[in-house]
Amino acid sequence: MTDSEFPLVQFMRDGFDPDAELARIRAEQPVFPMTIPGGQTVYLVTRWDDVRNVLGDHERFSNDFAGVIGLGSSQEDPGGLGFRDPPEHTRLRRFLTPEFTVRRLRRLEPRIEAMVEEHLDRMEAKGSPVDLMEEFALPLPSLVVSELLGVPYEDRADFVKISTNRFDFTAGPEASLQAVNDAMAYLTELVARERRNPGEGLLGQLLRDHGDELDDRTLASMADGLLTGGHDTSTSMLALGTLWLLENPEQAAKVREVDGYINDVVEELLRYMTVVQVAFPRFARDDLELHGQLIKKGELVLCSLAAANRDPNLGEDMDQVRPGRATVGSHLSFGHGIHRCLGAPLAQMEMRIAYRGLLRRFPGLHVAGEVPWRKLAIVYGVDKLPVAW
Image (cartoon, rainbow, N blue to C red; front, side):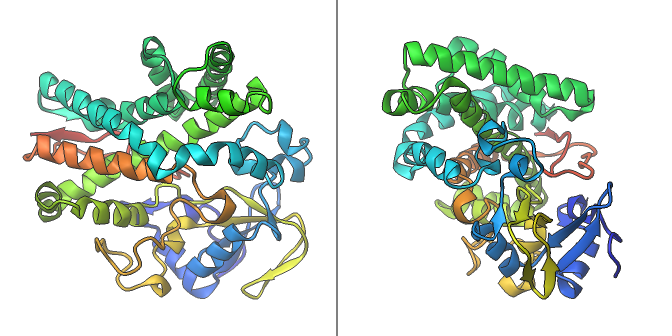
């Protein structure tokens, strides 16, 4: 196997499964050098223990993309917490962490249940068949983030539109960039409003508790990071998880009928799907060795979460869905270490409520047409999910 032989394999899938070449790389050369356009060498890390070590070691690996390539300090970087190192990362995460405890998030549970039911009502009123992406999987995460941030009710229809446009890559790069700018413009204006009159959402709470420590742009960037991390990922999980359940009706029946079973299903589907295929890029702070491979200072390391979550060293039959498996909780779908996804408990709650509500409302739900899979996607998913009942 040679350098640059598979420079895109980490983004490729065959249905639910990572490309077979990724498993071969994991077995034969788990820290795999690839040459990307421009001639730079990037190292693809694929085994669970190596990926976990890289993600958990902020002393040897940096997330400060802007600083490493010379665009400025991490404070100037608009990428949110995922592209920041301590101490700035530590400072900002300290503000957010109390708002993402399970106890705090439980206050959102009744609202998420209500939003799920409202969308199911609309689906039922519209009638069979529908595109589940358009009617359910795409708008629901935007509304959940709206509720979390405290977006006013009168703004939510526009916010959903802004949010979904941001992740619509079919219109080309200029439209995508414009959508990002629109989202930041709205969030900056919302923060200014919340500063004048703090509401009950996360933004209002942060301004009440830490308003003197956070300027409007920083807080808007943090909110944008929550939108980025919680929208496309949740949309993809809602669609892919539903598709798998519809293709496995005995599992769907168990979700409908057995209290608590949905918890095991969600955790296992998160591992199996691994919709975020690679983690935020890391850079070596100094020359180092990883699994026998020399990596020089400043070189880029990509961790394949999809490969790591299917690593046979993690457990048996990792290419199969086994709800309740002994390795539950060991997956890396939310990352690991100081950059582990803050919104993990919220995403898990959203999946549990949405899958069970959908399957109970439409026990005869089934796929009703061709499902177009994404190609070469960092966040894997489908573009449509036609269903009928």
